[in-house]
Image 1 (tube, rainbow, N blue to C red):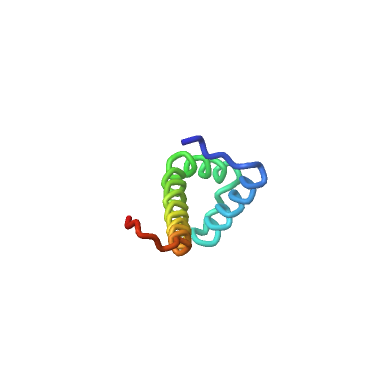
Image 2: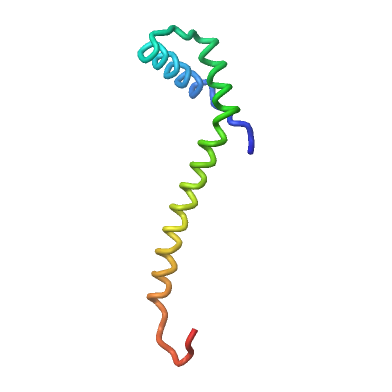
Length: 84
């Protein structure tokens, strides 16, 4: 798996979310540097779990659509003497 990286804008949003969470839920001012460090830690150590879950969810969605396509194709078949 490639390293999970965020653009500067994305990281800025994530930093603000971490800072807001720490302030509102833990009554702690985490600061810019600590928030960035925490984002890097979460990305490197936990990001793979979220990434893999997203891939699994995508596979389920694709399989469901492929089942629909397969059923649609079967509905187009013409009757013949040949049995599958």
